[in-house]
Length: 302
Image (tube, rainbow, N blue to C red; front, side):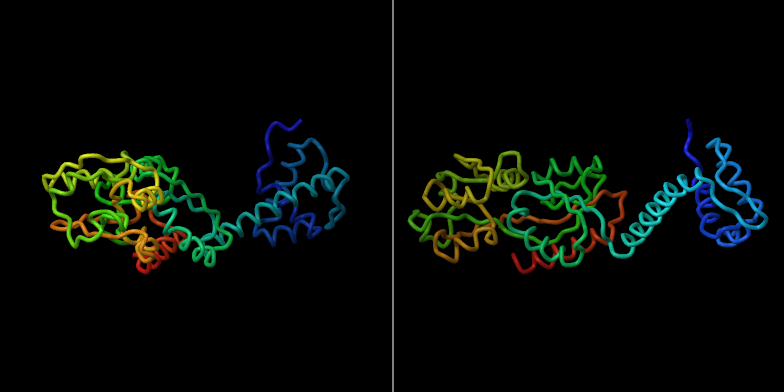
């Protein structure tokens, strides 16, 4: 029984000897001395406790045990050579794996177009996507469980880099039958009287909305927190309350007249969206390409 695996250099020497039939030829292709090849074969035979090669003058022939061992050695060497070629291909073409984190909004409205374009560039790249709030995704990035996080800027950890991809402004959206629908501007005193539909309480968007209005001395009286932009739009459409969303998220409903958009006057409610990367990590070709496509897609979306 073998208690340790043979050194790969010994295996390669054995395969070269089997392929070329002489120690001299094997030494030439491996750029070794003949004695080095001979020593490798002896070491293998001692480890396996069998004779692998019969020597007859300058020629060699494999024993029965040598033939069996060669078949396995070829498989090992071929697999390692293939792995080396695949790694080289990854370096050249950026194929491989990319682990992304993105907010639910970006997953729904931005990423489908980005992924379609990205697949055209890297059809063999394995893509993993984690959806969630920016704060939770940053925890995964710090733990090296994600490569990139697409989310809202504003509170970048010390260990991370943030690169802005696009900016947007949140607006009020209401049903066409809502009393606000005919207004050009919503007075602040009316804001305090209304019920609002906003994104999940633990989200960066919710925190930003609260902070923004509190900074203007306005307290949002009643807020219904919902888990998706689609739910916010639908409830605003049927008159449940006033939604706070970005125009690019509600473009279809606004153009169809199902919702009416009203700007947040005095101080616009602005957000920065971008990509977070760990400070210690340099982005790969695949990651740079994904970021570039995201930026181009966002410019036509917002």
